[in-house]
Length: 334
Length: 132
Ligand SMILES: Nc1nc2c(ncn2[C@@H]2O[C@H](COP(=O)(O)OP(=O)(O)OP(=O)(O)O)[C@@H](O)[C@H]2O)c(=O)[nH]1
Ligand SMILES: [Mg+2]
Image 1 (cartoon, each protein chain N blue to C red):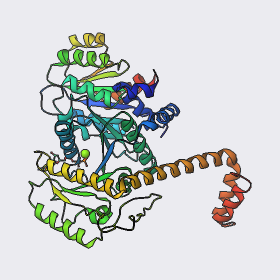
Image 2 (image 1 turned 180 degrees about the vertical axis):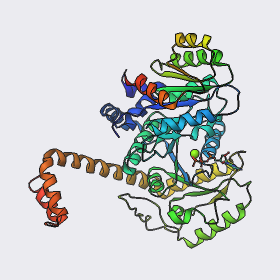
Image 3 (image 1 turned 90 degrees about the vertical axis):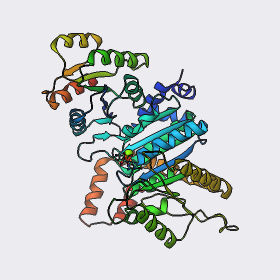
Image 4 (image 1 turned 90 degrees about the horizontal axis):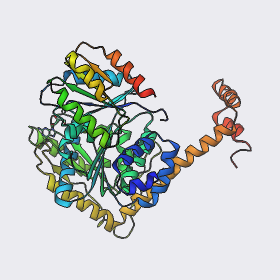
């Protein structure tokens, strides 16, 4: 049986092994992705991000429990933690908070290290999500530590992005710096049992009031842009991110959060944003692949020595980068 | 992205309640460039095998201080095998009496380390065991 058939048949070992090959971007991993692609596009992708220690993993644990018990949905979890930039190693500890989910064959948790480049992580995560989608998981939850670019990458991958805050992380709400509010479809104030929760909620509210609600569809080339909503009923279709308080250690606020997520899905569907997000995500992915392929072809075409010569000329300020591009591409890649 | 990372599950089965040693080893393996999945305290053999499967690890490291190694280890080995993960290498850290060492090896355990073992030795042995 081929790897893709095994995945479609629900073989968990084949699934685990494919995830490794996909993460390593191996040729046979890619080949299987190609076979699986027609089976994707069904799962609801939920991104969960926020500062370290806000309780993301505990929240994901509760969300998954709820989806299992109340809705009998199959849930996959991708938990991303940073790799050490010095050694390339990583300690991936999110499973510690997800022990309630063990023993359930309809839950699959996979830890991922961020490894090299941000672009590489986004692509690898997208591919891993596609595998789970094809494997028939109804819900795929991706947890990442909020650290700038990675939140935007999630927002662009997920249908629904949760940004998790918690009281007692210092006076400043961590969100302001990173512009994290702009990517939130739902704001979660976790650790609502802790002192200071009212303050956290209040500052989030006032920040939300300041921010004009905008359509949030992201495009990523190091920057993002938002695509405007369909013209006619613009006001009717605006989504204002709700704030939901939770206590993840006790499961409090989880049914309400799940209801908010369901309302968001409903909004995406009725406004046409679901399709728009899908389209944008696939377009970004396609563009990234084209860029990679062109770069590969370029380096195959241009001898390394010629490339180095031209680079040296630029470094010496003999020619500009624009002239260098013209020299290197002249007559190529037509 | 292309080099294959060594993935290690570090688990703490049994009921003894501290994981300092396991965390020290986890960090040392990370510093050696490995990806360590840390699962926390009081893991049952079933939980360990399930995590090893989902994470597609190359190595399972068990930290057992409770003296229950002769009960827990064969169960973990058996579950790994029945899940089809026959090539996963199992390492054990803990207080293991000499007379149990050979029996653990017979069960297919790759390495056994006492409290005084150096992390360099563990790293070297993992690299050798996963190289083939
Ligand atoms: N009091 C309280 N503690 C919580 C709550 N949710 C999580 N915690 C605790 O906060 C700590 C961090 O929880 P995690 O779920 O690991 O947080 P995280 O955001 O996933 O952490 P990283 O992945 O390391 O960024 C743990 O000790 C949790 O038990 C909550 O609602 N209330
Ligand atoms: Mg976490």
